Image (tube, rainbow, N blue to C red):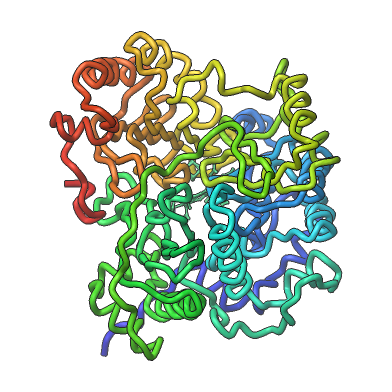
Length: 566
Ligand code: SRM
Ligand code: SF4
């Protein structure tokens, strides 16, 4: 008889949790420790929060025989990255009242607060709820924040794609009442009736996190190929006909385990707009039924697909749908970045895209970004749109507010914050890493700006200040700032040491490749300087840095996740 597979610990905890309740009530009321009961640390993720410690203080507190300084990160879902000014103000308030005074705009268009103490979790989540925000499914083995292109130029198509993103998000939100019960004293703001059964997920939810993003060509500014499901809007005469469907993207890997790899999603066909929800649901259910629940390192959809083969996966999808996807339609992506500064649309409303370094909203000497945005939120009548590149669009600004907004940003030193920066910096992404992320081997958000100061000197010396090279840094190989889609990717391997990856393209359609390992800062500068000089001298018109390093033979092109390590 075949051995029964051994489920992972998280599967057992989910199964016993009574739809994500576990012993969270007891954990919260235990005032002796700042931490939760062990099993609840898994469950709290589904409620949008991670238990963390302040890693800067861990060893000092250990010496003093104190427990680590526990606090919580809370991730607020913002489907399509679109928030109202009132919601922005509320996040700002809560960051000051319960968090560390900063707001993090994530690489998936969500808000994060850090440093919330256990005793303040409930008040913080209630604060979200009053502004019609929630953190349910911010993290955990469910569908996460649904991303969509925040580009306001394409407004008619964008509105349709945004509506699809919001519908997918609502459809795949867990139905359990546990969130309302635990955090909101049973109150419920949702429009969908809650019930303690999960018609889509079932009682043990998905084997792993699940991600969906929708893009409007020619912009791939949400990196759809890094998602479990990527949807490419196909529009004609300002109307969305449907979507090309891509499945099996995901970037996480583990050093030393080449069986784990970043992988871009494969396009498997076209679906009319009316059926897009159905397709998402059926892909989710296949992953629910077929995904690996024994070893979480191999649980993502990408491994499910590579295990059975893409055609077997497609056949199953078509069977569950009761119809076939039709052949994918032509499309073209030109870049995965944001366009900074002012832009307008035919309605006469304008938009201002601000570069936010590391996605961090805070006040620094001479740069009171947080204050400026708070003041703008008090009168702005459009939206705050979070981009997939950790930037912010003040969207649909009334013409009467345009100069007031600009004056406020200027007065607080927050704009034009791109004027003295190289395009390299404006195209940089860094994950949170230290001091809060438990997975970080090295710094990212706190260090990349300093490295960029040094790289900027080289970039300027070679006349490349305008070259928008994508540079992305993470503190570990999990890939939160999508480093494997960076033309330059730096992935933390040890304190102060990074692996250098080169050769992704500019539109998020090709992974990069390992070039050098374990470099310190001198090593990074030493390796990159001659390549940048070569690029300055030898590039062809319009040739991106990632394409150049392949043409010049610095690295081979990665054509599929399966040959990423080759
Ligand atoms: Fe991530 C885990 C932060 C986008 C792949 N990610 C984490 C945790 C929760 C660390 C942990 O497990 O203890 C990090 C919290 C750090 C902190 O202190 O805040 C974290 N991930 C982030 C954010 C905040 C990075 C940022 O600086 O913006 C992003 C939040 C997105 C959101 O709003 O939902 C974030 N993470 C991503 C992305 C990018 C994306 O989705 O486009 C990826 C790569 C795509 C993918 O999913 O494959 C990503 N995060 C991971 C992984 C690796 C997953 C895997 O399949 O191997 C982990 C670890 C895990 O899941 O076990 C992880
Ligand atoms: Fe943490 Fe690693 Fe993600 Fe950075 S890439 S936030 S270090 S899990």
